Length: 170
Length: 264
Image (tube, rainbow over all chains, first blue to last red; front, side, top):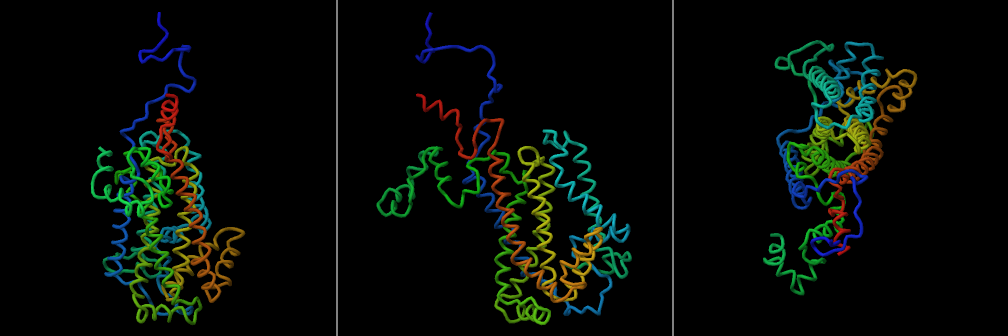
């Protein structure tokens, strides 16, 4: 009876059962890649593409500049920047306490609390349907409200078709 | 494979000459451990982990929206600093300054365009980044807090864009900010005070312009850079903690295997 392993090392003791830490998975080396060059090259291409787009857009389109600010001449419609257009659209339908405070406040608090509310370990969208459905509904509603407020609203916040009257400003 | 690449070839031979050794500080990277060491010793690469999962390379994983947002921030800093040289935040001068920038300053109109379009694109990129991270489930442990930092960064990006919107002091700027700050006044109890603090008065005026300018060029950029540092640091730290594999991606080494080989 030999107490050495096939490669000649002596076995001092054998402990039956499973390791306390659980079965250790073999690292899947083939699924790991060096950041340099694999990720960095892609990041560099992405960075240069977006920079090139900005530089090209800036050749083609000039930033808007209207007449000098005049506190006595209120334009009609009065529009907030496009990223607040959804809020402005909501404010035209609901009481300011709801549209100006509860909804945006709820979205911000909800976003911050999201990882602590949805604390199931599943990452796949079909394993966390409630979270995905809620997020999607809010996101789609927000996008629609933004588009309406930005492009479909004219004088006195009335409905206009953007191809007939254009009131969106960037 | 890597071995021959690193020891033959023009660059490798150049590196072995006295001149080559004086140019390239470190010896050629031959083994995976060498290559990881090259990563650790680089200042610029310290924001990246040494290894990532292969899935993270693909476009569909992230759409590279984090990189895109960061690049746009860089574009905004560079173009913004240039514009600062020609701009005074006072109602008497702001608008004429913009006209001068557009007509007399070298590349003034172009730099202003870059700043404007980068700003809009950054708001879009950051918002899309958040949606992409949500659908990927990347806010799950251990990344919960980095999601929270990301929400703060989104809020700061919106504030950055909004404060910058006033600076041209044209009709568009004036009334957009009038409408935007009116929204703040709807908050119960403190809303009126918040609006007055933002405006420096009851209506948009000279002190509003100065306040928005200081927020835009000093306060908010400092907050964004600080939050971004935490955001990127957490991204690197959390991406390394791959509990399934037991592999420390920070160093690129399998610690258990290192210990085994040390025994031999």
